[in-house]
Length: 373
Image (tube, rainbow, N blue to C red; front, top):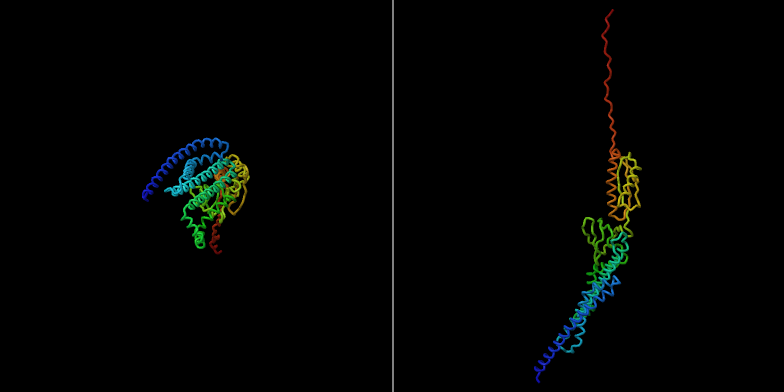
């Protein structure tokens, strides 16, 4: 038998083997999908007693539907005889896809755990300080863990390519200049990642915290792995790198609690009875839904040659309610002064004195001379 006949026979044998493998692959995929269909309700039933397990099963449903057939096909290729045409390429790409699907499954599990922890600690309650602390740590750490899974999956995929392994070895051999250049180029990226870890652990800021940054008042809307989104009071968004919070001072109005004090400043005349205004301010505070019942004080804080300055110090449960309370008091007290003590509004006094007009000197009328005797 000549060489061409052997080649034709081997090709026919390969085609027959691949036909058998293809039939087996279809059976494996169908069996894997049926297994997923059977195991899914069982997993949900077993996980119903735990919020975390339920969220993990729900998030991992779709990637698991792909992971089971991929693993089955990869195992099935082990039964194909060595030397079969195209076997190495098929095993390689099935291995790459399996790595990617497993990474997808791991990231889905991380997302499920993060979602469950957020559900267990809702932030829509009156005292949500602890919940916001837990949610901030969870979201930042979940993003970091997902990034680590992606990097690990990419590394495993590259290791399956022989040329990539050689490229990695050559890069390691010349890591002097290349490492310096890459380190300088990625300095901001790594600094933001490290800043994200510091923020997750030390928590100088949390989700929904009220911050004053660069003179802007806003709430922390989102914390990503590289930046923070601050929602300004007028619906604008301020994007701030994480490293900025490590290197610069800023104000956090909700660091330990949301309770806050606010002031209302009024200038009035010296004739205003401060005691009556103090009673009016306390009455307004007690009738306001924004006051938390802690502080309502009226004090004379300054006096000039024209007027006196009053400071009304009030407390509220958060900065938003405190702002509304201060506006309410300012408007109400001005209206009260206008109605009850209009003469006590700030005024400018001036004393104008006019000098009397000079009088003309009195002239005695001259008498005619008397006649001579």
